[in-house]
Image 1: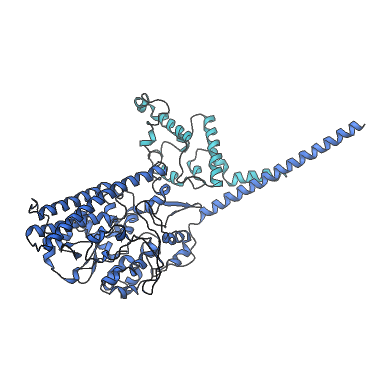
Image 2: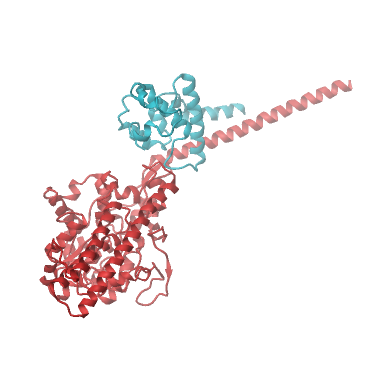
Length: 493
Length: 138
């Protein structure tokens, strides 16, 4: 009896346990099922709306914060260009400084001329020998130019604004709706006056059509430069906004500013020297033909040229350009935000996002890819240092010859070799990839630079080259001592 | 109680188009967006007319096909739901082997001369290492 009762109690207990357990499992399964359902629902929602039109954007909407209301993800990335991160050779470090009345910046990038004082010798007599710092992100382009100490040494023209501020809307306003006319008016303003016309560094409207979001070119310098280049390739009347492909545009919008340039004539028109081609030799030949010099070298009297960040030109000589890879493919790679695919608008070094930029095509581990890039850059840097030493030797010899009052043909020839040697060297030095954009071409350019330095020293010893190095002498004599020739391209960063 | 649980399960299955994963339709592989690029690439590739996802990414035979689908399906949804996976997505070792074998399904006559000289699992000889764009570039 007692036994029976016990069995009954036990079976009731085990049944209750069974029910409880079932309820628990069913509860957990339901929770799991609903959680999964909600997760799928959320992912679906992410994929539904590419963007909400919160504000109306027009061809006058300059403020990126307004665009950011419609495109918050891109705007968030864009604002991150304030980041200061160092890679092995590029990037910048934040150096604290005490703000002054004249320069309110509380931190700046490290000085390049203090890192390598040979640069001061190369640029002797030119404002770059006064102040030249490592480039920072897009967010700083306007301030860093407004407050550089180069401004204290030379009077700069309004032309500089072309690439240091968002000029599309100001140009159109100045020109009464005509972009090119506005460009011409601002070019002739003093820098300080032009500075009051712009209020932002590069913004959305500089690359995007506000109605369609398609890429478009807004910089007169590039519109005219690429037309001249295409004409040299047998394509007359090239209209970049009508004729370029979407993939080309993904490089062209960057090429609006990351290029070599000079200010032409007294009207200070910004010109990209591409009428003969994009290679360094073709650009040099162009400068020889028009007889241009940036300044007269203080120690040697050579008619010198300053190269400016020719990223677009050097990239075009590399394997990536040849394979149809655009600037944006590596510097603004696609990324996934929820279910949306967007271009990364935090423009910076691909070394900081190897997976999304390199690994899209190169199936190797990130460490391996980084090592490959750094191998190229280290080799480049060694060669660049050799070229720099060669140039220093030539400048020292020329300086001594000048002090000895030499003015013979050998001396003039050596001055012209200096002009070439330092333009070629500066071409890859001012370029911001430490050779990576086109490694072999960069090495060739440095080899040529070393050779020019060698030939210059030979010329001083009376050995004239068999093939005369182009009529650079013309450059020196065409506009002798004209003050307007100097200090024209100081407006770097 | 159990009914609710089953009901939620069935509804989730239908809502997530679970049934589509039983089919051969390549669009279902891009249901969750992560493979959009692969799907878009395949639409433009030379193989789009002759091979769907399953032809290259599952082994021959019904059992092998559905076993692979089940295993990949589970792990793909697991990582997609929990996050924290490598992007761009990369193929795993086992799936790469299946894909390599799939090339042979059609091209073995042509490649006999090559494969005769390589040991099984020889990493040096891989079809997709050179012919990467035939299925989809990325």
